[in-house]
Image 1 (tube, rainbow, N blue to C red):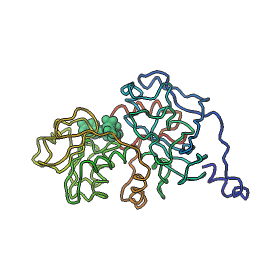
Image 2 (image 1 turned 90 degrees about the horizontal axis):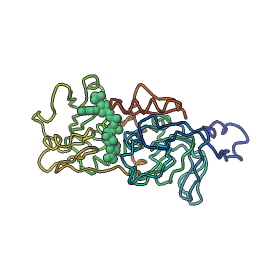
Image 3 (image 1 turned 60 degrees about the vertical axis):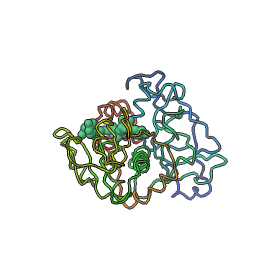
Image 4 (image 1 turned 90 degrees about the vertical axis):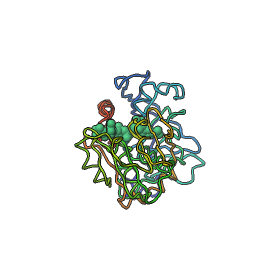
Length: 331
Ligand code: NDP
């Protein structure tokens, strides 16, 4: 944003380089635990930029359940060393580029998921900070027409939604059931299934107050899990995406030969589990759907949370009741 603002001044054409400080504000934890381990560090080190990386001035970041699970120490065996600046999702402005970077330049507005594999050696210096260093291959241009909050809400969830449907092999004219349709992943899975994959029928589960949201996202059938057990209903689906952790029940409603992608919890055959991978060019391929409005970011109405309220935002996410995405902005 600094660059966009200075672009109108006559000096801007010759002076594109933004001053990058050595220190920054960042949320950090030194030990695993609940949200109370988080502290705001006013003098964290701005990460160094590798030759294949850009430095992004973060404008907005989003939380994901994996941030909370990682902070709780669930992935210690494969995590980066402590202390950790958490956060995978972000949108912001490129302020520095590594020597090998080809696709981005200073001033570009980008978004992405900053670690290629969220569970295997994720970055120690994440997105809940003023600056984050990211490989260019993990980034995409911020979709035109989306603000930073909207863009930051997308990368991990929309790539999970996309990779889940792709791996499950959802084809045009097929049916899909999305368990957890109102969450970050589910709200995008419904939309991608209908708008990108051409599903003929999308059903999804949520509690009573969220059924209208499911319909507005394109669900043909909204199942109230407080009133009905989806596994007892007669309908069977070509694909089931489980974003809740109901893998045992999910396999009861898939057609023979169909697929069940399980994002969390135990896997029952023929269900399969996968973990999202960050990929900038795959994200770029979704940009036209985001720019045309066919696929819309869903931001939880309690947010965006200011940067000072990251602890509150985590606590809210960890209720498991968020609608769409919990976003942190401005940073
Ligand atoms: P969210 O925190 O956004 O999900 C919250 C939503 O879940 C709420 O809207 C809630 O709706 C809904 N929900 C809770 N319980 C149920 C239920 N029994 N039936 C239907 N809906 C329910 O999480 P995400 O969407 O971001 O992630 C979902 C899960 O997937 C998490 O466990 C996450 O860790 C995992 N995940 C795994 C990935 C992978 O690569 N394997 C990638 C991304 C996520 P309501 O209030 O109506 O109950």
